[in-house]
Length: 67
Image (cartoon, rainbow, N blue to C red; front, side):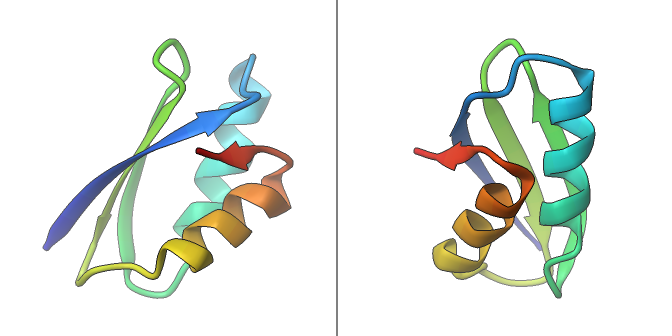
């Protein structure tokens, strides 16, 4: 298992957390997503290393920006 933390800009509420969690959680191989709204971070646990572009696309689809 691989755990990686990403910084996400633009999240301000619980709806943001749910949107990012759903989109990132849909990436193949992702087993867990934890969003820390106060820190503006998303911690992703996956079976192997994730392509940062895939994470960026998922965060973008949710309406936010991966830093």
